[in-house]
Length: 116
Image: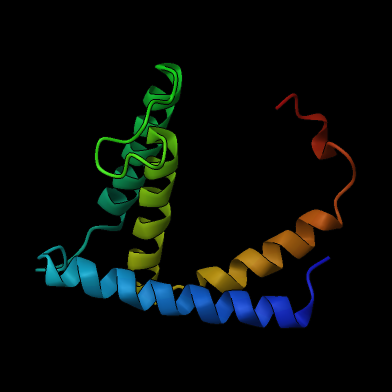
């Protein structure tokens, strides 16, 4: 169960990292000109595809951060892109995570009869 304390801590930490992800991205030229929301989503998809490919090939160590696997690195890239763009588009993603987890906890077992 998520407590108010853990929720507030998560939101505060996420928002701090969100600002930092945006700053790093901006400092490296990725916020010059307008951003297309569809392209932002496509780039997140590409990171997930790279995670899948790494996993399909035995999930070897990352070329850039070898203490982590390729899938771990690519998942991190997705989260960093989410944080960066949540800041850019002024989205309350951390708060939405808390709300969605609380909602999911209230759902029935394998709700909707989904196979996966």
